[in-house]
Picture 1 (cartoon, rainbow, N blue to C red):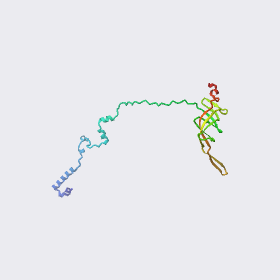
Picture 2: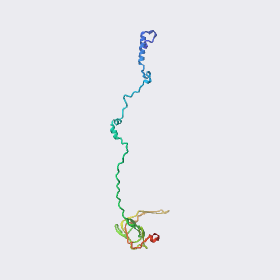
Picture 3: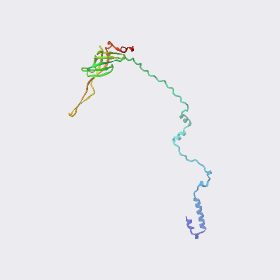
Picture 4: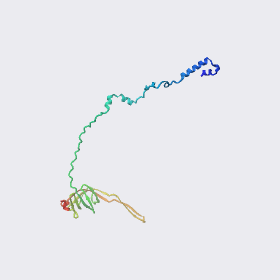
Length: 224
């Protein structure tokens, strides 16, 4: 830039100015950007691999470093997999069912009500006065005894038939709400009542064998 200021006027032209201009041209040509792809042909261009490739993940490096034998062992065989021999299932021994006894039922009258009783089951009856827990009782008013094949019908009761039972508990029935109301009289009464009852367990039915029985063949002769 100093050389330009020295040779700005035409009166000061001298060989010194010419030398300064030559130096300026050399400096400009030296400072010009070097663009190689403009001076070279496209056929001379070559692709070069990067000297510093991207680093691999440690998992892949360890996988690649494993020997081929270990990889072969880890891979499953491509052949058909034979199923393992299975042992024969053990069949549990079931107990032999016992012959069922002839099922009986009876209709008995306790107080003013009739109940169907079956041996082994329990029923709730009206409060039996004078009966305590674990007391054994006998119900003599047996109106009917029946089984799968025969029926003993009483007239009005089955002679000598009796139902044996045991008293299990003396308790009160569920509460019943009694509500009384009279309209326009301001009269309302609400009370609760629990009826005393007795639970008895039926033990068995006996004494009906000598009474004449009625079968299906007696009712319909075509069934003989």
